[in-house]
Length: 476
Length: 65
Image (cartoon, rainbow over all chains, first blue to last red; front, side, top):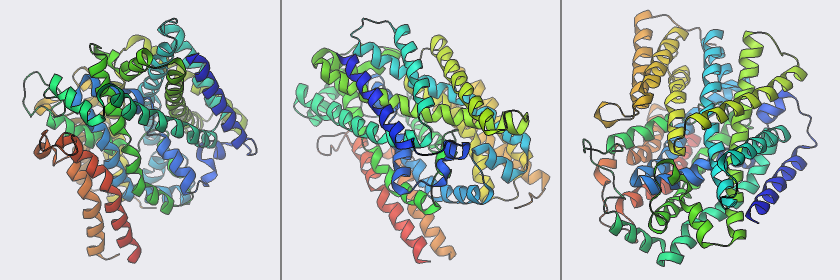
């Protein structure tokens, strides 16, 4: 019953997306950046659509359940990102429009005059997106397993999730995904408000009473351990540096530059940045859902915490209610996965296959190459799911350690004209090496996020090389 | 845009991120509760909620110039 409702929601959304894109001709320009024609509303829907993902829906609740106050970082980093984006995105858009850019590697090639640097950025974006897609795949698998009341095992669920993802990307382009986001966000908003208000109200009377109850069970659950606390990984220094790392890296993914370039004007982008933080407030209710689950279904360990409030739904609510909430959750995994897959495949086919290897340059070949690459990324994400079982938030943190290293190159291109390709390349290489080395221990000395430490190394090397070489970049 | 206007925009837009990061060590506690919610959570929700006001003000300064 619950699975039938999920199927109806997913198929209905794909049908809705198809009717909204049917009349447009699908060339790469339309497919990747929506012909640079998105007004404030459609752009808001597209950008906001990236907020409500499996990560928000299950991951944030899972961390509220398993780790407590550490989860609050998720509330803050988007807001930090929008304050940075307020200044950064309009010039990135303007340069993209003037120079006909489609992707972030295009931006690097244009600003630094180095094809090699652009290809390196493209390859990094392509591979770093894999854990992010694994995150959505894991989210889908959890939802399908719970909605099936345990009748189907995780392998069957993940196979169906994989097929759903591929189906979604092949039927809708960027514009289809943006319109489908309207359906998704409405449903997810409803599901999250239900989970964050109705569920705690049913068990404890109100969200505030629920929080009081959780604090009685776990006295330090709503505050962070102080710096240097023993046996505590997620201390205040970790919290602050993780917000900064994720906030700075927010717009560096392969799907972000196309989303930025799909805007009609820089003004549209700036206005979006002003109001976007309001969308983040919904996370509060996701935390409530996670905390309620901690009191109602205690004992989930490690990655299992990601199932938190969906298990409450499964045990205490009817199958149709479970199906509606899980269906909303499936859309929250499918749509972002679709933009991520599309972004990564577009970047690779344009900047690596096209620019570097000079293959698949025609529109027809490019479209087929993009489709093949979508399947490759989705498959690699599936492989990662098999070998690397971890929580949804850990998958996203892993992604940010790598992707944020691209930020210095973007920011310096706008504010420090003297920085050249060698400086950016050296910083990037150092940042990725430190970041990669830190994977077995994501917390650096002093309790800070190891990815943030890598970012500091990255910026320092970039600045040192720039000062040492004194070579001027030809400003276009 | 005058340097003064440019700096006031940057300062306005920097206030919420600072309150959500560097101020955290000073607000990392449960009391006083606000509407029954622990202080740290209430503080963060509040600053996220008022960020649009700061960005809106920064935008107005940009337009006047």
